[in-house]
Amino acid sequence: MNIRRTAAVWAAKLAGFICKKLGRQGVTWAGKIALKIYPPVLEELASEVREKIFVVCGTNGKTTTNNMLCAALEAEGKKVICNHTGSNMLNGVVAAFVLGAKLNGHIDADYACIEADEASTRYIFPAIRPDYMVMTNLFRDQLDRYGEIDITMNILEKMIRSVPKMKVIVNGDDALSAYLAMDSGNEFISYGISRPVMKNETNEIREGRFCKRCGAKLQYSFYHYSQLGDYKCPECGFTRPKLDFDADDVKVGDQLSFRVEDRHIVANYRGFYNVYNILAAYAGVRTAGFSGEHFNDMLRKFNPENGRMEQFRIKGTGIVLNLAKNPAGFNQNISAVMQDKSPKDIIIAINDNAQDGTDISWLWDVDFDRLSDKSISSITVSGIRCQDMRLRLKYVDIPSVLEADVEKAIRMRIEDGVGNLYVLVNYTALFSTRNILKKLEGEQK
Image 1 (cartoon, rainbow, N blue to C red):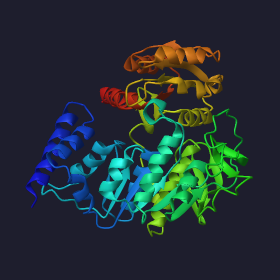
Image 2: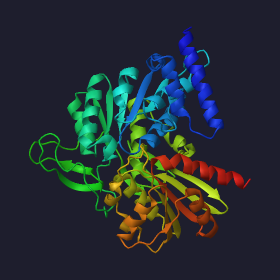
Image 3: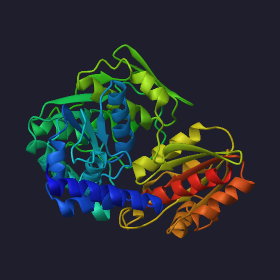
Image 4: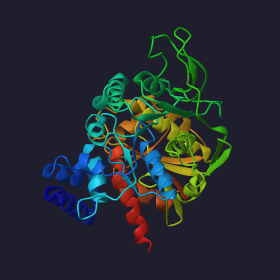
């Protein structure tokens, strides 16, 4: 029995308990304390995973994909360690293992599903040595923290190469992610949607316009959104890989459905981007050797918590909370909102704390003009940078109500709104807004 490791686990659990009682998330503190007491704690606990370790990386969709993959493995009867809350830097990953450990300082897990921040893979990969890496996409995100997307790609390429036996499960529709997988030398499996699903009506910034292999401009036969689509390089022959898991007959509306490997997948979610999240989780389960026969059962029970299309009902108002932290993600949020043709109110909360990125110039790359629609009864801007958000809407002639206090904004719309409310928030506004909605739910009881 390793006394220091056991002490690290106990201290982490105590820190997590206290933070929860104080209404704080507390996950990163638990990990930080565990590392301080016993630095090798992550490496040692990860080595106790009996079968395989998954890591999920990418700009958008990590939390949903990771949690769905975890639920799918659990549906197969496996015990899984997972950082469900989306705390994806080193301390958050350590916390997933120590909080999931028993009081004797050991874990009882067949698999681990770990969401990892791209920049933090430098510290996470050497400790846990993943067996599989799921790549969702690579979009521009928080320029002041990540820099240009090439910096993120360089980090990921180095980390993929550092685990040569790791199999990469990659979104083949994303030229940037596909290039990384192909260039790494690691074995890779690809998933995607080989046929166009809907007309792309956005004016998005296309990150993958140029071939990463030779620099020539890529030719696209169609885009799904952002740079995701069917591409090829006219100069060097780089092209979208053959898709091992190809979603066909995709239908988007009040629910999502598609066919893959002659299996009909149905999920009660909105947002075309969720097809990719579901497909990534399915590809992960199948690549791990499972038949996927329980996948639809998992989807019926799966609750996308932690502010990812999370639903609340307060005083007769249906509320959807969703994270929107960069241009590609926000545009897909807008698409999901606009699929709902009924009258609705919208609250947009923007912060500029360190974890959000203090540079909010990305707001000018979002197609907010699409919110100029008769079905939208009101738009309220909130959060630390509410004035910037109001100015952004003014430039596309969309009026808004300013209320910096998120709780006041929500209460206002519950009292005088149309009974259908979408709350779109960036990263640091997510946890506090979710707590507000949970509190307001509790006030009804």
